[in-house]
Amino acid sequence: MSKQYYEFKPLNVGRWIVWSLFALVLVFAPLVFGSNLSVTMLSQMGIAIIACLSYNILLGQGGMLSFGHAVYTGLGSYMAMHALNAATDGQIPIPVSLVPLVGGVAGLFFAVLFGYVTTKKAGTPFAMITLGMAELVFAMSLMFSEFFGGEAGVSGNRVVGDPLMGISFGPPIQVYYLIAVYTFVCVGLMFAFTRTPLGRILNAVRDNPERVEFIGYNTQKVRYLAFMIAGFFAGVAGGLGALNFEIVTAEVVGAARSGGYLLFTFLGGATFFFGPIIGGILMVLAFVLLSELTKAWLLYLGLVFLFMVMYAPGGIASLIMMNLRVASFGKLREVWVAYLALGVTALVVLLGGGAMVEMIYHLQLDAAMGDSVKYLGMELHSKTAGSWFGAAFVTLTGLGIFELTRRQFSAQWAAIQTDIEKEIKRRETQ
Image 1 (cartoon, rainbow, N blue to C red):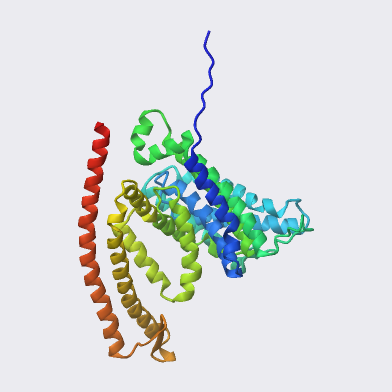
Image 2 (tube, helix red, strand yellow):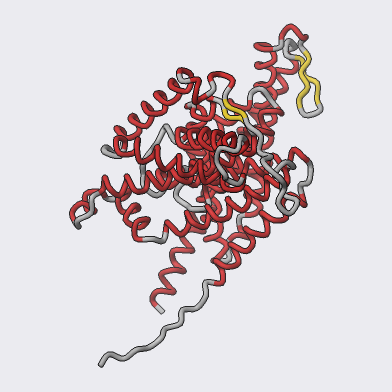
């Protein structure tokens, strides 16, 4: 007779703390940042986090570079908006709080439809097929105005029916908390997906598809299932976007939106689960704040992406994890002075280079308004040699000092990594 016994596993305290802190941040963020702009940005951050995490199911976990992820967020937005309008007209009895799920189901449907074709191939062919699908849907959005609304798009009103316990989803703060609930639930579900057998085999398909085929798995089927899951969560993000903005235009299925998901998921760190969360936050900060500060924001964004690819291909999340590793061995205090020096010299380079960029943009776009340029409280003259000489001098001086500091930091960092490896080996031998 077999013996029955019970096994008790200890709670993962660290994970409970992280998720509790995440929930607290979602709850209290609008209380700390209470302005209308802040609440709107927080709502957009929640939507962007879901969208970037859904994209990372393809890119980070499955190794599938997609250029058309906005197809599923965008079509989810359109279907959610049509469902909202139908609810307003009394055609379907659906509460506003469930409208994002309509977007999720729509994203799943189109992922089933398009994914069957796109996941037949992997690697570069997959990327090219997704790009073709994205261009096809974008072209259709301008052709079939009955569904897509043409250039004007489709608009709606999220205040439907009588308020329930004072909740009408009219005030932005109520919409934010609805988005926060969806964000927490979706992030939790996508994290749980990474711990499932499907999520693990998806990582194996990314790393070694030949071996996965050898042990009996169909890699195309694994990619297809992951594609459908990513489509569902992308549709949820699109549905939330439809509620937040109350209008959906062809821009939501455009290549620029897909490129934004790719760029910021990479910047955040596609190889770590929390990387796309950072990327989603940066996406909103760039599109809303940076675009208001300067007309050259796309140039700055491109330069940041370039330097991240060159020096930190793992994204911001990889930089955080590397420093956490150093901190766990008590070595972080040895490099904080070097970090401070790198930050100060990089800021000097940015100030000088930014001044030249702003003057160039002024000459190209606003030359008729005179040669005066306002830059960080200073007044530059784009047609005066002194301003150009000063900006160039600051930039070149900062670059020289930054390079010297970087070399010293690289040597110090290498020595610390060597000490850490020695410490790891010493612990293994004990």
